[in-house]
Length: 247
Image (cartoon, rainbow, N blue to C red; front, side, top):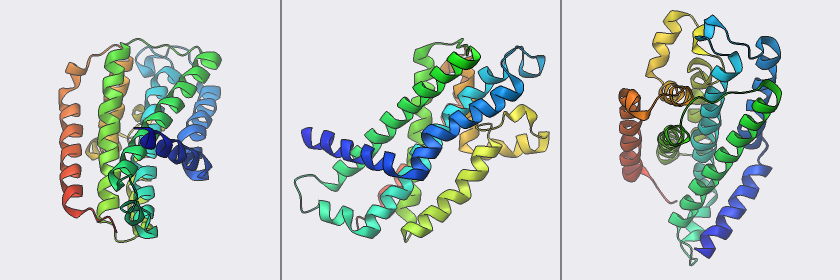
C-alpha cells in the first residue's frame, strides 16, 4: 500500500508537469466557465429550461474534465509507458505493472475530483452556481462516467502499436466528442441533426446523467444512459484484457 501511495504521488507530479494534461483538466474548464459566464451570465432563462447558462454548463464541464483525464491522458500515458519500456522494467521490481495501472487510476480520480471542486468553487464565487440534486446520485453519475471513459482510454492504449498511434486515435475521438456531446457547448444550441448524431458518443450519455443528477434527478431515471456506459466499459475492459501488451 505504501508503495502504491508513493507511486501515485509520482504519477500526480508527472500529470501536473505535463502541460497539455494539466491545461485541459484544470485550466480549460475554467476558461470556458469565464468566457460563457461573461457572455450569458447565470440568470434563469427559458432557453435553458428556467435555469442559468452556468448552471447548465458546469455539469458538461465536469464531463470534459473526466474525458480528458480518464480517456485522453490515461490512454496516452499507458501507451507511452509501454513504448518506453516502463511497464517491462516494473516487472523486475517489487511493484508489479498492475500497481502502475492502479496508480494511474488513483491519479485520474484525484485530479478529476480536485478539478471538479475547483471549477464548482469558481462558478459559485463568480456566478452563484446552484446545485439542485443529491451529492450521492451525482457522485454515482461521476463514477460511472469515469469508469467508462477510463476503460475507453485503456482499450486504445491496448490496441495501438505505438504511443503516436494511440495519441492520434485518442485525439480523433476526443475532440469531436467534447464539442458535440454538450461537454463544452450546451447541446441546446446545436442543430437538431447534430444532437441526434451526438447520441452515439459515450460522452453525450455522461453529460446527460451528470446534468440530470445535478438538477435533482436520481440515477434510476437514466437507466438507458447508464446501461450504455456500463456495457461500453465492460466491452473495453474485455478487449483490453485480450489485446493489452506489457511490452
